[in-house]
Amino acid sequence: MHEMVVTESILRITLDHAARAKAVRVCAISIKLGQLSSLVDDSIRFYWELIAADTIAEKAELRFERVPARALCLDCAAEFALAKDSFTCPSCKSERFKITAGEEMTVESIEVEAP
Amino acid sequence: MKQTIPIVENILSANDKVAAENRARLEAAGVFAVNLMASPGAGKTSLILATLAALEGRLRLGVIEGDLAGSIDADKAAAAGIPAVQINTGGECHLDAVMVRGALDSLPLDRIDLLIVENVGNLVCPAAFALGTRINLLTASIPEGDDKPYKYPGMYRGVQALVINKIDLLPYVPFNMDYFRRGVEALNPGVVTFPLSCRTGEGLPAFADWIVAQVQHGRHKNPD
Image (cartoon, rainbow over all chains, first blue to last red; front, side, top):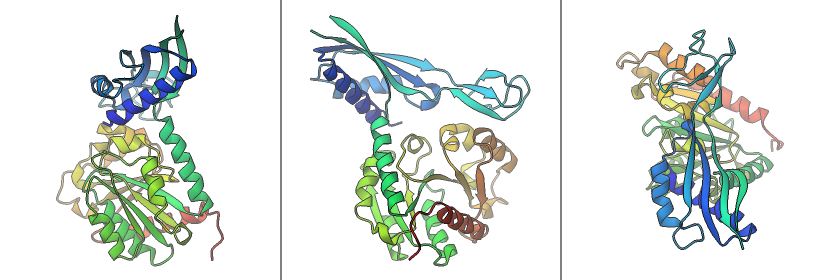
């Protein structure tokens, strides 16, 4: 969807924290993306090449952790993987559930070189 | 020396911060703001104009129109006598809190009770960007098809109210209302829904009454 804006945010967060640590280079960035976030890794990598150029994060490796969507059934308390096209609890067929994972969209950590 | 710095920061936290500022500003001014989202052509602008008519002067309306280009929607609102600001996103697929902050500067907030922010027509991206409004309102429409909750769960999950527009087309379009509602209920249990038709006016009084109640309930300023 809006990977350009998201990539800009990742870069801003990265550079903020790198500057605070007085880093000279950012080696890697760990990013957690839930399945429901509608964000595409390749698209983020594409924008990253463009906007991180000439920064200390230019050569950073982008490490994506994908979190599958999971839900908790409100009727039988079963936890289950949320299918793309069905919102039904596999145990009791209930359609009442709470999403417990899959909406993540965070910069988890960065690996930097500091003097 | 290599070191790992733990961060765990939401990628859109900068937007969320500005959204919180917008929200505080709107609440201080006694403005109840609604983020109106839908696919293109679902009837967002029609809903605004039909709501204006159905409100019969009970609330003073203001509008922020988000579009990729042009000012057709803001012109329509202005022609109806509503203070309106157009935001052209220049190709961006959604409104964000910074764009809305800019638009708030151009509106007479002290003379607005209900501010409707018409987002860019899109069922994917707008759901991720908080604007600082009080509620998110989604307008679905019959010709879009009954499978939309299943295809755009992020959007259907993130709203506090749902309008189902163009119900006058139900006899002519294959649309299984039970299937649609089951999807909605699974994603967003108990969300308040308003089946209506902006064209015939059916269902609009109930929606207008609900919005008046919401504004009165959430009001901080004294009526003048």
